[in-house]
Each structure stands twice: as structure tokens, then as C-alpha cells.
Length: 207
Image (cartoon, rainbow, N blue to C red; front, side, top):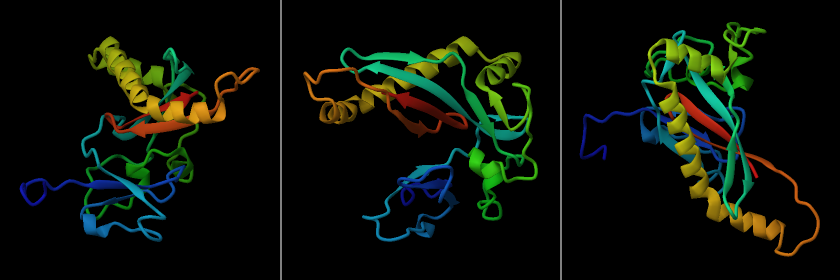
């Protein structure tokens, strides 16, 4: 695509496989800049086009963490919590350039990173600070004229489609851990997945 369309000059975000809390995530402008610890077989990474114009609140990039209960695979039964969490960057957002690619407080919303920023704001209010409720974000968007009902409908649709895509793999793990006819109750396991949507849309899967 890059060869056929020279005007397409994206930024990429690289996320090492098996990482957490923002560890090892970085931005690049040129695919040749990718850094791998070990071989591609032992340390694969997910590389995505970085969304350079995310939705901002108070000039800050943020993510949305929603909580989803996957009660049953057959039949498929899904519940979504009415509220969630939004985590904010601690530096005003600017579109990525070669000079600011490494400014994690501007580009990455991970709490484990931003808690070390001198601009991190602890607040008891749900409407301010570096961690806020998702409902407070919806109120802000509503005040801007956004159709919050449609937003919720789109989010629910995205969650359902994501879980449908994961269902075949989840069934394999479920059937290997809980064979048919196994007596006794089963337990819940906490897992997660993420994809970019506005800033980042992050949902928890509990199955």
C-alpha cells in the first residue's frame, strides 16, 4: 500500500505479544524501525496503524474500559456493565512527529505509565482527574451534542461482534478445561482484549 500510495504516511504503534501495563509499547514512522527482542518467532508483536486524530477531552487522549460478562457460550449470553472507566494521558495531545514519538505520557493511556507523571491528577470526583468514570465522559459528549444512545448502540454492536469472532477459540479452551459431563460448578476467569476506537476502546471479557 505504501509503494502504491506515496501520500499515505501513517504512524504505527507496536505492541509486543504477552505484554501488559504499557510495557514495551512504542510508536514508529518507518516499518524498518521496529525493534524485536529475540526472533520474530519468540517475540512476535502486534503492529497497528496509529489513530492520529483521536477524540480528546480537555485536550488529552483517553481510553475507555468497559466490563463485559460472558455468561454462556452455548447459548451465547452477554452482559455489559452500565458504567466503566476512562484513563487519561497526562500531557496535552499532539499528532505524532519524529520529535514526540517517545513521549509516552502524551500517546499512551496506561495507568501504570501515567501514574509516574508529575501531571497525574488524583481526584475523588468522577468527573475530573486522570481516572474518571465512563458515564462522566458520556455526559461531556452529550453536552457537545453527541448522540449518546447511538454511541452506546455502536459500542454494544462492537462488543458483540468481537465476542462472536472470539467464540470458536473460547470454545476450544472451554471444552479442554471443562469437558462435557464434568460434574460440579464452574468458575469465572478474567481475560481481556482491546482494539482502537476513537482513542482506544478496551473491554474486559469474563468467561
